[in-house]
Length: 156
Image (cartoon, rainbow, N blue to C red; front, side, top):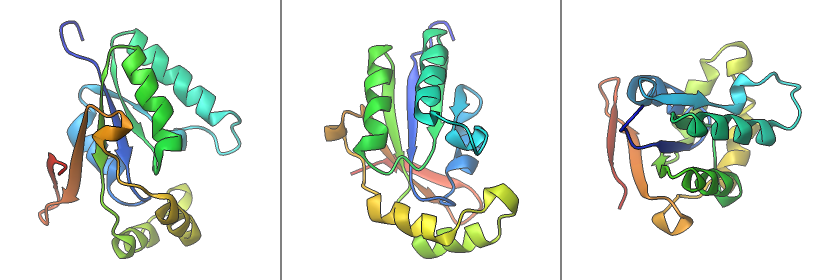
């Protein structure tokens, strides 16, 4: 990616809020996917592994998208710090909560993709809207557009 500024895209939202679909449609062409969901279920030290993969990609000049729920500063803080340490712009992609919609989309999932409903409720209890005050260089709000796509705008 010579000449292209590095970006860390931090996706923030409930499970089944559209984050992974958004990644595939909007970011996959130029951002390497990093997601704890891709690690084996029993894997240990997932946070350490995620940070190592992120550092490796950024060190090699590749932008990354971190596709987890990332509900609070405890989760996104290390991502922001690592991104800035590598000279990357760090952008939060905020998926405002729609618990009923997430529960309905989750119910349609199969196998490992489906999470227990209690997981969605637990994440909702910890979910916090990211802001520039959290160290992000930009915060974008992502919503379904009603036509099978997404509407992305600068968050207020």
